[in-house]
Length: 312
Ligand code: APR
Figure (cartoon, rainbow, N blue to C red):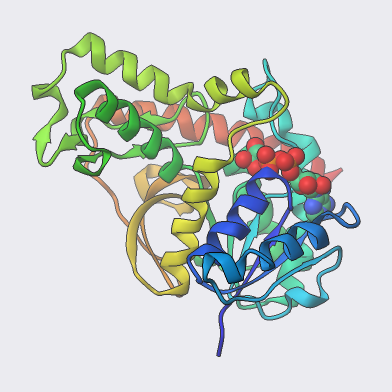
């Protein structure tokens, strides 16, 4: 049977995800958006690039969820992007309504899907999708760590003048200003970063990573990044669809891991057909653990606001 991926939100991130999925021939794609005509038009346009690009998948755009039935993966990108001066957290309440609606409908039509959440503020939106879908925690996973890590790797490679493919790194924690780039674990073909760059340079690259999203927003002015975010989300889709079991930093629901409970945060996981198949508990130094605690606490604050909203 052919695989099927639904992408909710046919804006910059969603449309880029759909195109990348088609380009990689991972699955048939259903693109959903509330704006009439936009998912239909973009979907048809993508379908018509198949003969040229050489991909052979079906791409359908729609305003409802019927056509999404029995998707293997649902990627949720619907929601408002940031504008200059806004933090991801400023999007909380507006995107809560959008993501709860999308997750509820998608879950009803595809009860066995893996939900990949992209909408910001990411970790709080994962929690929202987890609560409203009623899905097991393994099947709700957020895209953040791959993007933050990709930014860190890009800046390291650029600084050293080496291939990005030789740079490995890991960024954990919430997808916000308090994210935790683990410098100790960054390396270039196994050579620790600290042996290649001085502390001031490393600090500068860490800060640029933390501000990576804002740097793009500042350039674009009317929206936020979408090429690297869609590439990152599609790496997750591919790992699930092909059951690759890649080990990737993703936002996962924690129940005791790293000492946190009831919160989503970025941690390394194995991602396969069943969703999150394992969460890795990296041994952290005291300083790293306290940075992670600060990051988890900032996600908790947002979740508390949502809990109060749900109760009212
Ligand atoms: N259901 C489906 N689609 C919706 C809904 C909804 N309830 N509400 C809004 N949308 C659609 C919009 O019509 C728009 O096409 O979501 C799309 C969002 O697209 P963009 O405005 O281009 O935003 P984008 O850059 O794609 O970012 C989307 O991803 O990275 C995050 O922070 C980013 O939260 C933002 C999200």
